[in-house]
Length: 377
Image 1 (cartoon, one colour):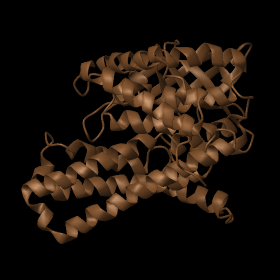
Image 2 (tube, helix red, strand yellow):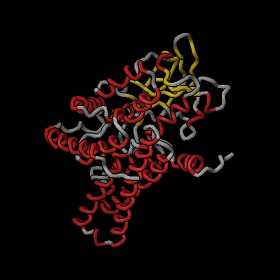
Image 3 (cartoon, helix red, strand yellow):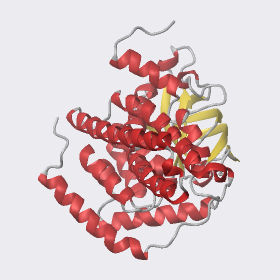
Image 4 (cartoon, helix red, strand yellow):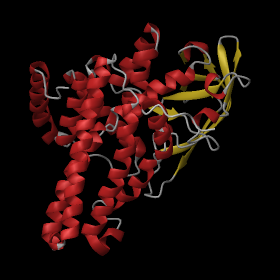
């Protein structure tokens, strides 16, 4: 499989680099950590700038390879991270583009691309995190609306979101995977209560969401009733297949910075540390090649990433944790100082083997869908 740029892709990469070099020097700095209303405004402002320059549509209107080039080049240039736009741009948006009706695509995709609306993800529940199919949030049909009651947890950016990609159980008698429906729920609907959750790193980008007979129009259903599990697999394939691509580039940059820091503070003399950094360098190079392979395979399969995304997500989650463990080794006692670089990143890296599907779930997917092993009983 040829992983090099085509002439058209190379031309896109060159144009993007030139634009980033022109606009980033004058772009304002982000707000302080914890200011999520400020971060929402900042992230939407950057998205609007991408839109006006003609780059916002790459997430859905371009090939997977061009999307990967976009993520690679913006991260290398130090452009603002998607932040509060993460769910809309990389999860809900691609899912609606792939599974939504023409009216749904016309309603929800342009505001995401223009930097006007933020989405959150309402999948996990207090008793159905890793076992997503065991979710209990119920929805029953009442005329032209679903009435939703239940709760969600670890709902990304719920406190600043306009919409939620919500999974609900619409048939309690059906087998677990067959009674689920995917809804787009307005976060300002009566009956929605949001309570932010503070993480180990001190941030509050997650929240609990309580739903008390929330009415969601049937027109907001993406896919057919009780077909939400299949639609969800499309969402998760994007989340595990390409959504972390820019972060691989970021990790490679951090690795280079760690080598510089180790040379400054004398820890470079430790041969074991040098070997560890060298192995991580090879690891992230391999992960980048795997990402390229996955998006090339997705292009051949119609644009939706496949089960290979679970291979990437599984290894990337652990490699990221290993990277920041190496950062602690480089920093020495300073790794306990929350004001030092990489300390908060190390704390947040602990969540990566849980977020977007636990490592145990990824092992199961790889075993069953790639290796063809039987399901456990």
